Length: 356
Image (cartoon, rainbow, N blue to C red; front, side):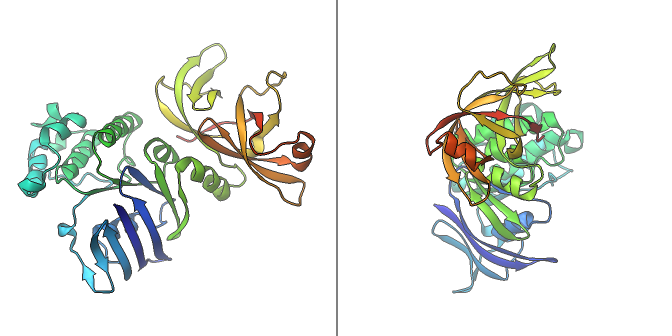
């Protein structure tokens, strides 16, 4: 089962034009800057906005098509929608908001159970609370749980963490990861945060001015997109975990699938999942480990692509663990060191930047 989206809708400054398929399982991200058409895309999928032309279908069920003329109303689409603002009913308690979702779902369609969802999202102790007495993070957890208790076949999430503080974001990310592990409900997750994409998503579609700029695995896509959008800074996004802090040298120790890294001047909480950027123009290479150097981050890599050109420098794509990175090197280095696909080298990351 896939989510097939082929739509066109005119916006103020550009036309949203999307023709793609999203996986029918797991978490897919829609990534892009503000105003790129991400929210409109979700609203068209949900039927809240009607695309001028196109087709929207989930598996064999068509929700919109111009030939033949078909348009399924939003309330008839088995979709849960979580907005940036929680949009809860203020006159109802937490339990009242959740029970509302259950009441509008036919008993035969209730695949997600009340106790399971409230346990996953840590709501058991909040059920009798009023909405006005909740924190922002608590309200969003209730909003997500309410959307899930309609037992949707697809969950749409429009930047659900945008207004939350760091601790609340981490709590919700953990809740979503746990839900994803337990259930097969596909999620389409809109965000402009690379770290959220890297942590949650298995597939990402990047929008720019209403059109798809790139799509694929996050680790393959984001480095190139960030580099292309900010060429003066380069790309390369690495998802890492904080292991500890060296007080003497003022370095945060990080681990990722490709080894260990050190981030200067950041005192981060151990266990925290973060994303960092390694600009390609600050990466250099050597063919052996242990040469004396002032660069403290050296990792073993395997060359995957050599994009040679007629100029002095070429593009090198390489893996560090399961992380794909890109840098430019001189053609002279490639020829002298006889670099080829599969070659093992050591990359020196001369600069790391915290993305969030």
